Image (cartoon, rainbow, N blue to C red; front, side, top):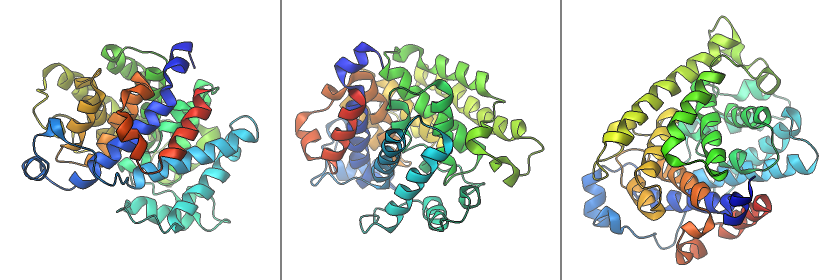
Length: 340
């Protein structure tokens, strides 16, 4: 991590932003924009709910963060060293009484299967699912220091594949972690979409066999390269739409109309990024725009918050909001560990 990122506490800022977006979008999920405006008033004035309760998006982000911390306490991050503690954390989340925030079906089905310790994780992975549950929780992979590019990409795809095995879920998770890493290292928001498109082209036919093993054989593809290229191609398509939207979309228009409702991984990435890029230096406005959308508002807003916090650091968020977000202590402790 660069000195700039250390100075501004990018990891703490990103994790807090993710949770704040999640809490802001939780009450507006499943509503259209007119209903949200009728309920909440002007979107630019939306306040953080009381209490500031989060969803499974933040809960699973914390589960992944704890799993990564355990894995890295044991040595260099590697597939087997990572898979066990992350799997245990996901199963722990599945059984937790606090898992009552309308979690996604794919995560529930896969975590139930992961509960059987003798079952290879590839048999639990839902190979046809590319829901946003794959990448709404991946931020820790982008924030944890000391990983090589190969480790970061492999870890991002593996954590997705534990539940969501579709190649687009893997590629979108890799891109999401890469975007957060770039922003934490000081990349300019104006060049971000171009950097992500280049990364997608470079990795289009790269299958991380060390991390994913024979996952690709569960699909109908002739080769692992064909399997993973399907995912990158869908992500490249949405990044092309995002490039056009950043230049043309009015901030007053529902972002979902431009880049999708966010229920699937590549749309959650693109619409979360769009909300951030519309307001790169106004993080709270970006969260409010993301929460006032017709799609998967909590996941869109949690990704927008992760991007904004990685870019601007912990000081991006109002102290009064940060002080009362659910799980705030654990989010800040993980952030402080990685910022140090």
